[in-house]
Length: 149
Image (cartoon, rainbow, N blue to C red; front, side, top):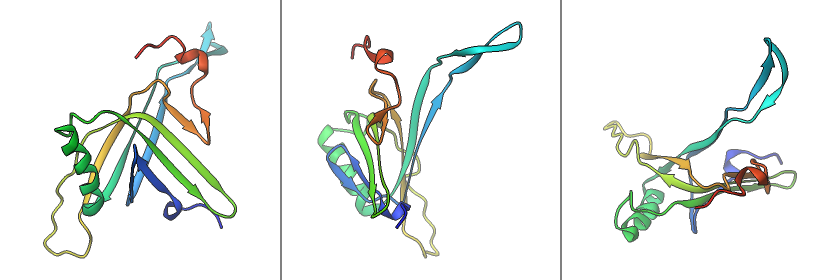
């Protein structure tokens, strides 16, 4: 059996949540270097990663409890998010480190009903450990060795 979105478990720190949708995107501004308009190698650029979780009311309540313990939504300490899936044929583990969440669509009411209310939770990756894909870091060790937190 191949991986699908149904196979993924998502952990926000030590909280396991069920997501309706989830995304994580990396922006890598590395570029081709040129001499006289001719490519002659490459240069590293800055990186960023962000994503969004969409959860139902009961899973939003789990995250809300963590915000309450922190004293506020913005008072929550950044946490790691792990996306993990395994089937008989495939396995995938993506980790995003030091994620800081924000809230966006906290209400989207449709009086007709027919679908569960969803809450959108965007996040930014803020830790130098950045992102690991199947245990392999995206950044080279020397890129983060002198960063002090």
